[in-house]
Picture 1 (cartoon, rainbow, N blue to C red):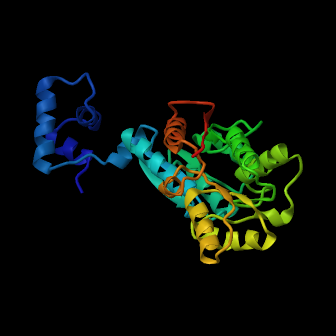
Picture 2 (tube, one colour):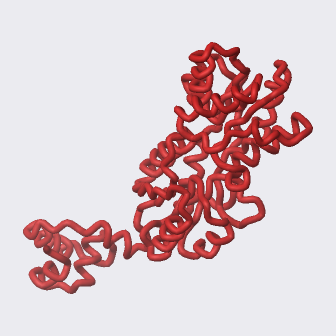
Picture 3 (cartoon, rainbow, N blue to C red):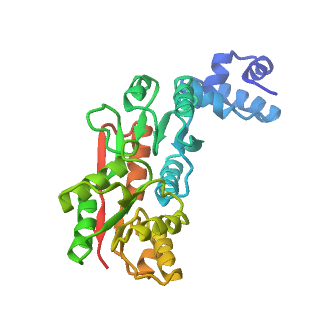
Length: 310
């Protein structure tokens, strides 16, 4: 494969001069530039983009660590991240983690070895404090509120809309309210925020039987509804409109009185069923996260979610 040493040998100019011509640098006379370019054309030389980017201290790639779950939080946020990265000329490398801390650590080590210009964690298992030391190798961005931990972050501020969702259920007469959670509250900032909002609105912690965990894929709403139907709820705060639609289908299939339902993610299914829902504005979150990962922004940026009643 042709390289700049071949061009230098054939053209008779130094490697440094050839490099200046290829990289459009100054301090090369026009006759010399044309002579070098003539050899470049003869040899059909194409610069190695990867090597050039690395020599400039960048890879033009952003790693996006995701559990690769079916929940719209991951699919819509990943789509937004990809769009924002491509608009800046960056590639996105999807890094599936399945909430495996050892894989998350491996991706951070790859950042240390300059495999990416930055890493974005859509969700994670590792403690935030373990990520902080890797900041010296490139931005490590998270997509939830980091609290007191000094990490760049872009996330939806969901607290007020979770309160609005439970208040809506309470105002419409729901007394026995169940909640679908993505993971256990001690492992998920989202789940913890939902439980905290329930406690604020109802003045007590939710009974364990009113919480259904690991509700991620839309179809899981059906089985989760079966668990709450056995308890006898009259309202359910779900974690996705498609999930809520499958919960509604369970009650329809079993000819049971439908509980009040609150969705999330502002999906078409929610509009068709005329459910109250929450728009977490993932497009904005994705743009901010990419700007942090590329170094255009620093700090922590929250985007306020929007509660939408039918």
